[in-house]
Amino acid sequence: MKKVTLLLLLVFLGIFLSCKKETQVSSSKVDAIQDSTLCEELKKEIQGSTPEERALWLFQNPQKFCNPKVYLCSEETHNIGVGKYNEIVLSYLNEYNQAPKYYPFTWSEINNMIRVKEQESDYNCYKYYLCIEDIDNNDCKISLVNKFSLDKTCYSIPLLKGVASVNSLKPYDTFVFTKANVTFTGFNSKVEYVFSVKNNFYDLSDDPGFKSGVKSAILSPF
Image (cartoon, rainbow, N blue to C red; front, side):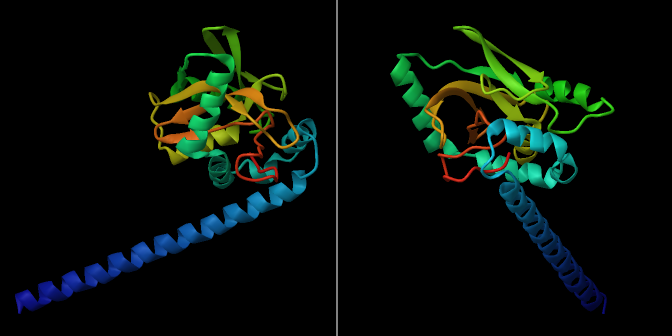
């Protein structure tokens, strides 16, 4: 009798866990649909405007898109894969006859900069951009700037947070930057900083979170 009761209990527990797992999957699908809807809405809003106009629009409309679900869409948009990453980095190295140089910054360094700004009473996720600049031929620096610039490689905070989330970053994990020749629709090929995190590879446009030319001729969000 005890064996039968134990068997029934194990069967019930298995059914319960199975149902719970299916519920979690369904919830995940709903989240994905919500993310996709927000991304498509954002694309429509910014299509056809200049990079500066898009930066201003994002700053003025943070209420819907300063959303962790949308950050994941940003990460997916800019995740170019190792093949494309190697191609554009090699293009730069060959054109300028350079040896590869890599510049690591920890997630802790970047995230601490963001957290300081998040304490501001008027903060929103599009108020600042992480920009990377040359110091000399052998080094570079990162900083948060409050105005998007075409003269620097600038990265949106939602994109960085999306990358951190997808890669489950710990404070000591690194963003490893290097230079590449990146081509965007409407722009000539430009030298930009691209980066790798763990086994993922990203290119980041001279546009505040928007790029084209790698996957699509249409500007994509974040």
